[in-house]
Length: 441
Image 1 (spheres, rainbow, N blue to C red):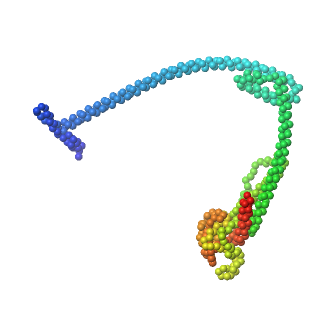
Image 2 (cartoon, rainbow, N blue to C red):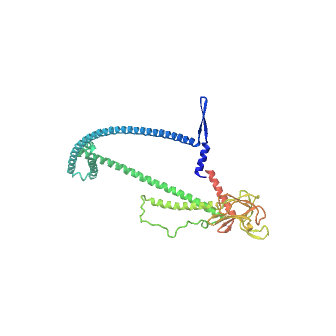
Image 3 (cartoon, rainbow, N blue to C red):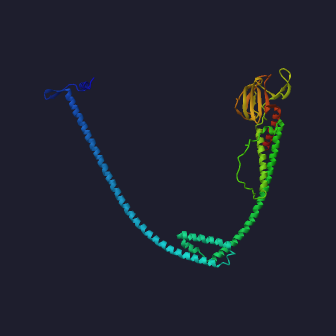
């Protein structure tokens, strides 16, 4: 459909032929309006309305611009008046500052003249000091102090002109300065005697302090030795040797050290002795810490809170075939599902089924120490878990080659089974001593 056809249909729809009846008195006349006449009238009306709106809007726009221009002119005039006032005030202040600078210049000239007079007086005092050559040997140290004071006064005179009047009052005659220096010398001698007395007291205090420190270090060394012997006796109760399970720290073959040699010169004769004692005590404390750490990681605890020993470590008759055999651990019997706990902190290296052990757990406690728990009903940990002392790890059972509810408990030192009962008895000794110590505290 063409645009012309669409336009024609629009005109026919909205502007059909109309007849307007005009009544005048008794007569009625008929006025016919065609569609094009109606369209013409509509266009004329629309143009009239558009023209009226445009003229009104333009008139309003011109009024707004005129008002804005008037406000801008008013603000410009106000700013100009303010600028004129500020310029006038600046000129007045400039005149005042100029007058003040002239007065200051005159004061500076007057002070410079007074400064020259003071310098002349200082030169006069210097010449008088030169005459007293006979006193120079006796008061050489005092003269140095006085020269320093005079140099300080000279520097103040040269640099600070506003203190010239005060300096004039502070300057004194050479006789007065010398008498004051003599008084200061006497006071210095008295202070020196007092300091020597105090120095003797301090030296005595240092000697007393060295004695106290030496006694304290001896007490620490004795306590450390006693504790080390007790810990070593605990390890001996288990059948272990300290050197077998405590690995010394690794050191590089060629340690990186160096620096210039500066000889050690102690301020006090006993300092070097105290340093040697302190180093020895430090070594003992390191050994004590290492032993204490090893004891914490040694399986001295009990695998269960309630149990009885049903088979010991070593040679026995096999409970199934009745033949003589070697028993690599101890059997601790108790009710089914009794909680089994770790006897020391460590890392689980095996957790699962292990042949005739049935369900088994193996824990590595470091430095070649391991524990095994066999014939378990249920394993509560997995390989790689870190466990603490008395952590619940399993339930007592009768899996594998077993005749009843119990836990087969082994202690291995460098992959060799040892008697677990010795470890449990040593643990009883350690925990008893700790409880007695806590009770005494």
